[in-house]
Image (cartoon, rainbow, N blue to C red; front, side, top):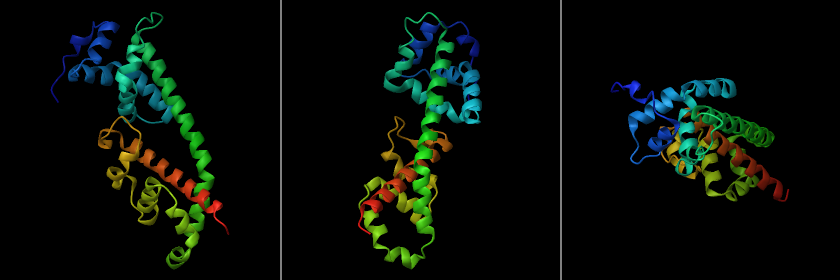
Length: 211
């Protein structure tokens, strides 16, 4: 990578940062410095304390969060004089990632029992019994295309989440259309959540069917 003259960005004011970050086309060296250097300390703190992870693995999502809706978070800083841009962004990022972690934990707890229940049912059946269990397959057929596809790939065919990312990512509500630009763990967690939701849907369909 070409060496960046970081000293060129040392004296940029908060207002100038916002103006240059939202510019089109993007100023790549400036973006690199902003996300990799200027925001490094608070991203490291958030990654370590919220996810027990490294900053590199939340950098892509932080960029998505910041650039969403034409850089709404950045533009909202205008007129705020009670904190620097770095302090403002660190607070916004900490709130965003903390709430996301909380929602993920709540969702995982909500789906875990149903997921374990249906997987236990399937694991106790032989291949022939699975094929003969019309209730399972009738319930499976009632699922939407996304849920059928993710269960077929991950449960029946036993594929890995990254093996099916190309196929499943169009179903994900993400501003980043190319999953390869995101941290691998985020892609894995997203598809794993799709699987849990699909299993929950399968259980619900089976419960609604007559015995």
